[in-house]
Length: 409
Ligand code: PMT
Image 1: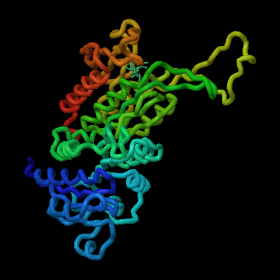
Image 2 (image 1 turned 180 degrees about the vertical axis):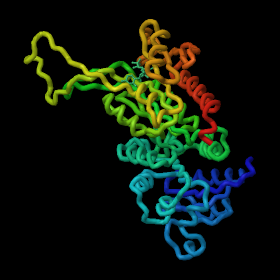
Image 3 (image 1 turned 180 degrees about the horizontal axis):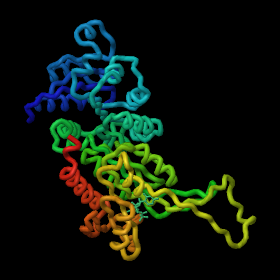
Image 4 (image 1 turned 135 degrees about the horizontal axis):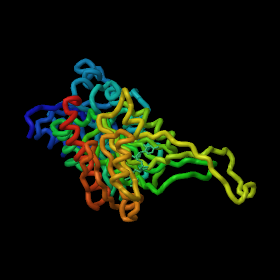
């Protein structure tokens, strides 16, 4: 139990999962949290103000402007009172209204007036969660700095199975404890960008140059950074795998777009470039090139793409404190990778033998050697890409703690 009282403004919106919130209030009270609650009208159908008031031992507000509330504590004062705002469950409708910046009732006014971190705990049907508009709203909310807890995958109240289930009370508590008292809280101010996947360089509307990168290795690194508490942005070329949840994801197609997105994300503290960026791009014909108009041979003139890793490593104003590249090699792996580290001026390069089909491009596992600037090397033997990511991120954390901790406190 912590001895330091933290104040939570809990907003309960109307979903069947609302009834579980009573357990959350009971547990948080035992841990010495102070809780004030606002209930939407629909939430009152699932849970009563009286039960919440009894458990929280505090006033319960309703989602309406009320002269007594405003005299006792107005909506601005209420948003200032709390250390965080926790919205659980958060319905698709409420997410949409927050994403649009609505401030037309008590809850949205309190939220938009808040200067504290806001945690959203979504709960909805799987199709509602996967709905394009909901997903767009989530990306918007992440870019506005809202923090998400869940949702989980499982059997939903409607009987369907999938993503959209409210995170367990235990998970919500763990996230709050980590946020308030966790050892790694210092990382939330540290921004990490990860590039991943291939780029596509189109020569006409239907043909392009690309490569076999699946994005898996980069996504796993982005996930581990996010789970460790870093403020993480994933910049990804086209892939067929699910985007990691709850972090900012920037989708690009070409190397030029990936470069522009990296520039947009500066300043950043950490950059990890796993993307297989096409080194060259062809001239783009706006109409499909007709093969019957061509001779038997067709030459493509290619121009060099900017090297993003080299650009980040040599940025004179915003060079990230730690820049990590990957080197995909088929022979003289360590020697060629070291040359890349030196040419591009990154801090570490992670040598990846891509001649072995069971590791590297588009495989489940990987085996890499980290080469540090002082030429020391560390091999990570064949394991899943998720385990490779965990090994790399633990070294990133050590590096940040040892070399840069004072810059982040
Ligand atoms: O995506 P997966 O299927 O999981 O596969 C993972 C991977 C094999 C793609 C990954 O582990 C890997 O090795 N990524 C680097 C791929 C690559 O293009 O390497 P490179 O040796 O060509 O480039 C060296 C470094 O420069 C890389 O960090 C690359 O992101 C960067 N680069 C290259 C060219 C360019 N124009 N801009 C860059 O930033």
